[in-house]
Amino acid sequence: MPMQPHAGVWGALLLACSLHNNVELAEVAWKNCCELEPDSSGYHSLLANIYASAGRWDDAKRLRRAVEEKGLVKIPGSSWTESFESQQ
Picture 1: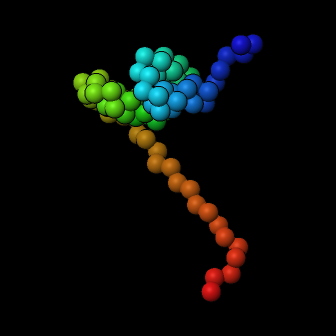
Picture 2 (picture 1 turned 60 degrees about the vertical axis):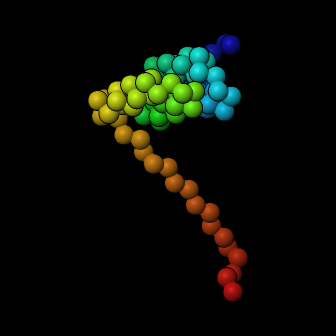
């Protein structure tokens, strides 16, 4: 690859790993995400969920505890739709 992937690319790979239950590759993607965006808690939450789905409860617990100790907070997302049709 002629350029280094940014955190969004690694994050997409991390999400794909969660969909395909690939814990080993998820750990690689998570490590790269954390190097590029160390203060983002979303990557930690996703890896913890991947661990939990794989039955690796101790790893999930350890990661969630580390997030708390670092003081990272997951920012909740929101979305909305707008309709211009008249309501009757």
